[in-house]
Image (cartoon, rainbow, N blue to C red; front, side, top):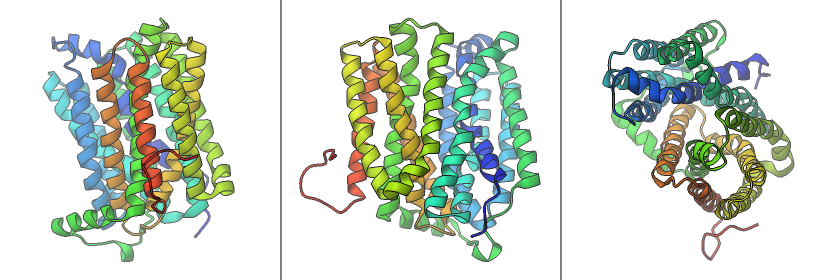
Length: 399
């Protein structure tokens, strides 16, 4: 395979960041949105729900389109749809109209969440693919650090509608950059003409592939733990530890920064341990750290100890997610778009449920968040063991 230009992972990461920017940036604006529309408390969650639904549905569509028409065309079209959907949100006259436009924007944004992973699979494999995925996460990881803080800052000088105009501007920049620089990495000869029945059959075939399913389940359960952290951390730090919003933003950014650092160190771990060895050992460490985090939550340890354990737990995701992504796609070439779509749907669907569940269980302590993170760690370890040769006995962590 040809050498990969230095700018390509940066561009792919910039495109993929559409998802977390659009999810995280407007969260601080929920109360303002509800007041603007004279809507009941909590009704802004409807717009988040339609966003999640659109991402789940859109990823399946985009994967098939990318395998049929190549990577470039569907990604450009999806970015146009996302940009228009964001404009629709900015000018919405009701909470229901905004929810509908969020669904439209999510359908378009799903192209940027699926297709960059397929492009990485097109142009690389093995250790090189892990390196590229880590570089992509370097750019992608900046979004959850900056988005909530940027959203809060925008509300100081503008309104919630300004946030969606910024989203639309981001989409326009992404569209221009992709139109100018993004190559199509799937040659016409390798594109697959596929109808609805054949598409369903193709997804079923991918889901029967053990390596794919087990790696994606690992990613999905780690995403479950991540969303539990995202949904539960404001309660832990603002309500339980009485941090000011600015202090919470610093903790949030620091934890995310450590995640990015670990994603960049990941390639060295993979070179030393291999893909399978890395996943096995890091998943065991993650399980141990999640158990420690829950213990600290139960005894209501001081914030320094809790933050340290939380940061180390979250850091391990930086090793796991890019490696599991490469492992899931390594047996899929021309159908990497469909495989990436299934991966994204499962990861986002299972992961987002962690955020919803932590909201239902919130009790003013860190126990619900840490408990759900441990549950995700246990499930991910079971998926790790399932992808390895079967051994007698129960599904328990082995170290």
